[in-house]
Length: 336
Image: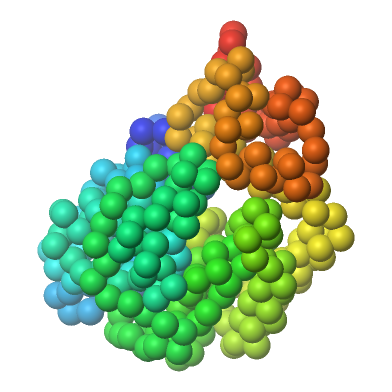
């Protein structure tokens, strides 16, 4: 299923046993081959503004993994409601603390009365709603406060979708992140620790608050020791080419280890693209000030690039236009 929300997001649903992704909408309909998951597991592929959601059914109850971004909370609730098909959503579990994974938590909890379980390392930041620790203020992103009712630590196990999952520490992108692994079906819910073509921004390294590169390397080495047939990433379609994805991730990591400026440019480009997906347009005149005042961009530039505000903005506009993700309309930069 494809549906479009405010901000132009696209959602695809993978539901077993058919093992296909159905895409429908204004551009017509097509079926594309996908992985075969257990009938108890559905994946809502959301795009880049909202992380993927995984709905796992156990009889007349269900568990949701991650809830998407704040501005797409209404869409998340509707997708979950459809996927539940009359079941009760008992709990919501997060992989990590970033806004595109926890942004719908409050809305989902209000709508379904579910509990919320988070990685234990997030506990203080969520309880105190620390917008710096949660990167909300740091990256100029939005989120709605919610109350966590349970914690998961690395090594903990839980049953969801009639499968037993083990929590695995995957620091790097988020230092407290967890992935969830089912050994029986060899399925890895990787969050942003591993995508088909890389991994999430290493915020601690970019901001100078931790060893993001070292932790990411240890994470890739750790999950590389698992027997995995299918990966459900935080963004992008589920995939089966696990070994090749690891090779691509290690290659990307080596490039960042060799060139910190490349890592910083990637972080700035990706996060501004994220902001543009949400806002849809930004003032070109105000962009230099926005980059100078937002802590993530300010620190990344100061630590690795050393550009003036106008030069940074000019480089960024050129990059986004070249990539086809934005274009100029009058005095605005507009998402393409």
